[in-house]
Length: 491
Image (cartoon, rainbow, N blue to C red):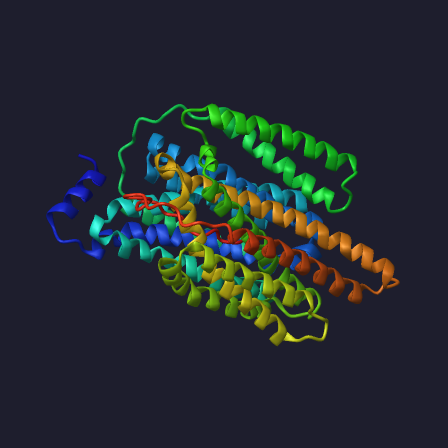
């Protein structure tokens, strides 16, 4: 009998003790903290990286876009790989890949090298969370799964809170290389603890791998992200047109392959449900807008207010606090009123925060930014859980078990589009304002950020309006009780 079978048998014969799974839990929590910390640190580090590499925001944003595209490519493979090769082995390999990618990132001397090494990080980081959650979910007895899974919420809350502060400290008192090097000791600890405590889960018979889907998806999403990035500068350029054509053709072929495959990489048949589709598009618009705050607010504070990275990190904490405070409130309101009312109000708060930020001036001060980000934090806390839960409930019953990889991967792709598009728009508006302001860089920068926040606010407004169409799905017996649909951590 395998260690996993022994562990399961033990939980059936003896009263459950948290101590019994503390070892596996620690290995997974440490691994998740490493990935989430790194993702949130990059938002603070981008201005420093732009200065050090003497590069533009339009180029350096690919260090984030390439990472999120790598995440979206591997998330759907997590289930297949763990069934084929074993959850413990794949989890340890992904931790190693992430740590190795981090080491390579610290040695990068050009933007192109950093972008390539971030892809390696993304390939490893994308599977840490879903595989870790699946392992712990299986180890916990049914009557304790809620409490045990709640423990995995710790890194999800600590990561966004500690990441900007830790990143700010390392950027201010060391060098940017340490935001990557810090992952090495954490990764080594996760691997050592995992080798000792993670159970060997028995391998399963797996369906045929969707090779064509695995090949076409990265091509479609990467080329479309590139086209969006180039289109922000000139939609009529050859690069933009070629990118759109290649991306569109690859996307159409990908959709055809997925709809015809018995076990597709992404279960696109779920979009046949109108309620599911509306919920997904609402969440996409919300995440696209929210990323404006995660990426461009820290950049604004460093480039316009000239705040040090550490101070910038502390400035982001109120937004994280409001999100954590309003998440349980959003859950209770969802149970009482359904997704429509809560999502409309929540996404409207996100839009209001963005529009408020669009009015910022060089002399507005830190209080202005804190108020704006707190408003966005309220909106994120209210709407995150309701929209994700609605998506699960609205999925066709026979496909509900395959919805989580679809939602997670799709949200990462949308984030990559948002990064590419908004960064390109910011760069273009900066150039335009330099012309109208007769070369005044300070005035042009403030105006360009204001325009970018305004566009993000418009995107969120579209999400709030679409949320009005959300309907309460018909109750499905036993629906999605074993699904883990964790919110996307913004990178």
